[in-house]
Image (cartoon, rainbow, N blue to C red; front, side):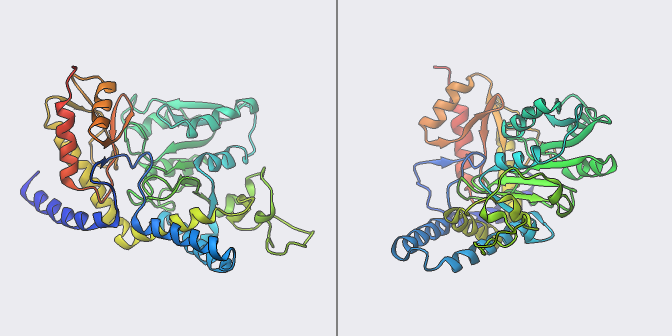
Length: 393
């Protein structure tokens, strides 16, 4: 780093070290696995405990207050992705369910195709492959076979392409896509744009309007620091009624609190995609986690996440024993950094790191590290040093 970069990073780490008190991670582990399942902040733990105590002692007495928490969560999610209205936000079980709402809600014609990449997590592949029975094909671009990953996607497009479905950040390689460029391409060619944002939301800033996304979905249990079992689904307002509904229940109707009403219609809002009772425990947890992120500010969170990623990149590049696999070009990564050891195979290196209490993952032909904004600098450098020490024996 240049001197001014050192000073900038030092100031970031002062803030990050202070932020570490938001968590109560055991000192026995080094947690670099936020791209898988994140630990909860202390306030999220307290929110869950308080909700459980309230429910256990008073039942549903405070249900109206629980609904206020749900309303706050929708607004926090609206802000996080820059949706026009909280009415555009649906709370679903997971990313896969949200992708299925799109895949099986759209009207397809025999011969239509969907363009994606060959690096997608199964959630963003299996759902589209399941449309083969409708005569719809999935085209998977090799993101490295053209001048840019976006060019590789565009090369797969033809006159029968109905939708481009891509992850904002690839889960294994950490490759970050230029969503605005893809969105503008889709608008020019009248193609729908679906973004799996699970490796972006909570790590870097996201703007559904700027990138012209038609659909956005993400679980809350990674960079958003929330629980499993609750996901955000955004659908552009004018497309809501174009998605055929295949799940029905009391909660998705226009007057869902009027239980005796016989003449019902699907809700005008994104609640039409929520067929049954809300996950109130998950809602209280995710609302608390997002409150923490928004208090810090996503601009600051992104700056810290990228600073930690850059620290990893520089340390790996400086090691003759390690090989960086993630694209380190400006704008081409977020919080995921993947690498391998030149002399120690991935299985041995992964076991070695786990034995030394490093929480990480095997992905993309290497080892994936994913520190968050609060991860201390010394723990990151300690882990790179450990990785260097791995031997074939």
